[in-house]
Length: 160
Image (tube, rainbow, N blue to C red; front, side, top):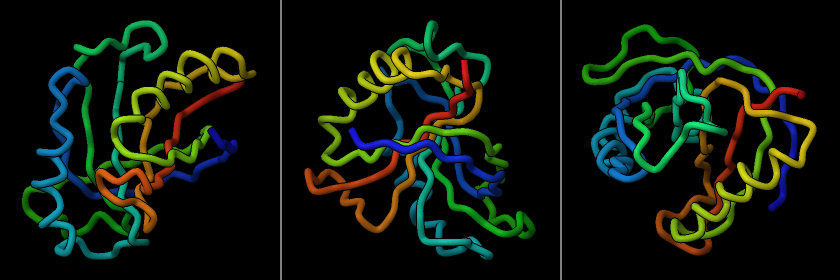
């Protein structure tokens, strides 16, 4: 998979969250409830969407399992968190060093992509996972459930 190393600046986001696990994945439910509210969000920075996983307090490399509960976010970047629409909340995405992978394909291949990242790329790199939010950046080349879809996978890292 193509990848690059990026330093991300802090970002303000407005979105919706819920607790889920990979076994009982509620991502579709989250996006279905968030999607209709996007138009009500003022001060959007760009059209990209953020699908975020907050594994706070979980050692992803050692303790993340199919059943582990974590906070999942659907969000957009904004310039200000004033006037948050009802039913939504704000979050600050802490910046720092990230490895960014370009993922091409549908949902069926995503598990293999993440397995490669966590079981091959990270252990063989000069980096370790950092305890910050992981996210997928969903831009104009994203096509839901299509093998022609593209998105970026952002994984927080720091040097060993």
